[in-house]
Image (cartoon, rainbow, N blue to C red):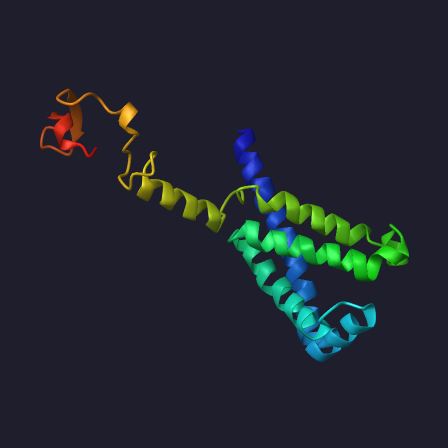
Length: 181
């Protein structure tokens, strides 16, 4: 039960943090506008502001959607956490900790949330989990490419009878020679 709750709690966290990033990305793109974002980044002393401003605005939008979907979490969460570190260095750090004074409290919390989510596995309904499951079924436990095929050490000796499913009677036995090396 705790594992199910853990998966749901990660889902809820992903959605909340994703909505926050979508909101901030959308504000940069649709309200401030990319030229305004570039001007803000230049005023803050961000290097390559003409690339960084629009790039971060798009990253916040796309990354927020990826967070909600649970897709490519290590990639997007790592990038979003790094952008929050940049926001601390270039904008909020000089204002102290308190968010009330424009400090870094809020962006530090977002960076921490991104770090936690990056390698969480995504929780319930995460696209990353579906990709991992599909890859595991395709690769099999040993990575052999055969579903359910174990390592050679896990297979019975050559010539030993092994259960084979799919026959008319439900199961029969085959021989080890039929299995790949």
